[in-house]
Image (tube, rainbow, N blue to C red; front, side, top):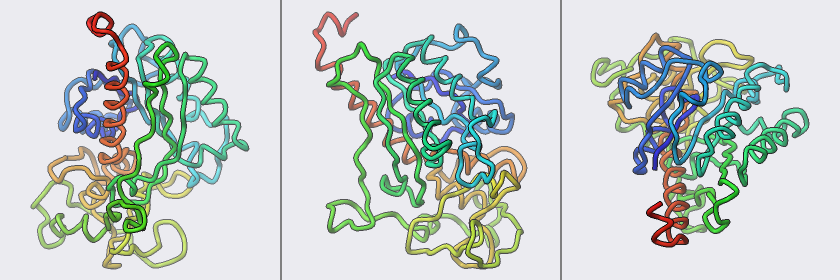
Length: 324
């Protein structure tokens, strides 16, 4: 299926959709480094512009529109969350594109903190916007660890199906494939940090073995708050962050050895990017691109859900309807 991607960042969601067999035909982001990373690793179809400056006539028609609209204003790590944060208004641009382009489906991703913002009114407002654009909407919190990603990363996933399509073809959330209790649930065990990092060359011993081996020199002192908690190698990683509390500088996750922070490459491996995927920009920019991304493995699971919905839709249509 043909995909338009908004707020694409470095392209974690898009890469997962590509792995699921779809084709991304247009993407955008306003950050130069993210666009350079995307262009170098995924394709030249990305546009360096804020979506606010892109008229819908410049966006090609597609089967599905996807995007993780900026979430810093919604994040639970932001101590000054507010509904009037200007970053929170960008979801309206997503709604505008849906209203004017009318793809069959959409997927939107955001942080779990969105659910409690303004006592739930922000979530209700966003859902209503999607519905008024002409879609049946389902929203659910998914943990990336439940889809083979070596990271506990809870995100709200909105999935929408255009109202004129049959309800039997509704886009639905994928079923988890992994669990912390695999024997009890018939699923695979969660992938651990130790397993994920086993394939990554040590950045101190082999600094040039793979791209992005640089790592933050910010000292790790174990304390009971974000960025200073130890990382258990036998469990999924804590969430890979884009910024520290309150929107400050980069907050790189501690390495399981307790001696340093994870490198850019190690953080990207936790986000299930391939070892060859090269992030463009300085240390802080690369860490932020990794932390802002949708894990590739979760993107692939969402892409498979889209393929399943489309298969159901096509099977419900007559031969002439499919040809049209």
